[in-house]
Length: 359
Ligand SMILES: O=C(CO)COP(=O)(O)O
Ligand SMILES: O=C[C@H](O)COP(=O)(O)O
Ligand SMILES: [Zn+2]
Ligand SMILES: [Zn+2]
Image (cartoon, rainbow, N blue to C red; front, top):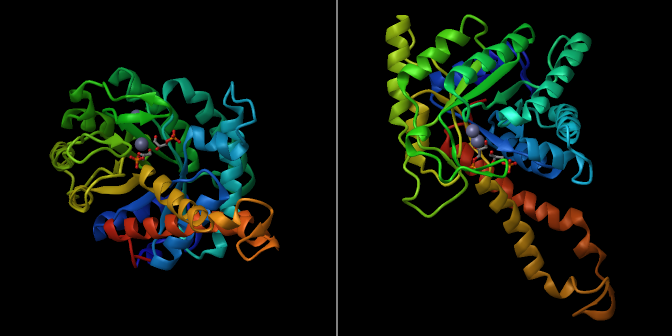
């Protein structure tokens, strides 16, 4: 059981617990879904599913999601809203986590070169929190310099990992680009070869980062695309991950068949077979956003359609002109419907990634 390898069995986990959980996931052939959360409502929808399915979960905020947490009305010129929003999400999740009784990894999503001041700001908060509590505020961050020249990506990622290492703060890095849309930037026309990573690139990353810290993972492109498209438009090649693992194993004379922790981006719209293949090659984290945005909408949309006649005026419905509609338009009613359909979809992902009943 996963909790047997954790020193902190429930709540936000950090450091060696994150490492041990990912190792355990590789051994038991499951991956943990990383859900993009943008509000307390999407947080609780995710946590409820993971609790009911007896699984660990990763909650992550993107730069835009963090700004949304702060409020879209807050200026974000120097990433101040994204920093404040990410910190608010982290503190909220840390506060509510014990109520759910499961281990949670608190993560932040893609951070490109132009957004590095966002990561810098969050790391300042991690260091401050570390001084006060002996652990960083977040469990992990992502740095995504995959659009930059590989040498610069690796050199800069190594510098950030050096800053994370004393806090045992996990760092996810990206090599090979994810297609589709990311942070409002359209990557749909990106050169096809850039979507796939070569084994020698993975080994260069491994041998540069490993001596700095063992707390890192690689989002290696194998055709991944953000968003959901018509079937056939996305060609995934998870078997490339196996080639990477073999290459690193041979070069390092490693005993492990899976020396590298891989992350699967653009999980939405992928097949169960693609997930299970990728997991068998050492993927421990699968990012899932778009499918859950859709699932969240469904509950609210259906409710508003079904209760249409009770949602036209504050007072007055088919049962009488003087009947108040408060109990229909209270956000706790219709937002809850969105949470329910999102929860069902998170639960499905937990089954698909073999994470169900792993606690
Ligand atoms: O990779 C993702 C977040 O980083 C999510 O991708 P999808 O929206 O395609 O699930
Ligand atoms: O990058 C991918 C995630 O789906 C986050 O998306 P976002 O930048 O729209 O919040
Ligand atoms: Zn990217
Ligand atoms: Zn992604």
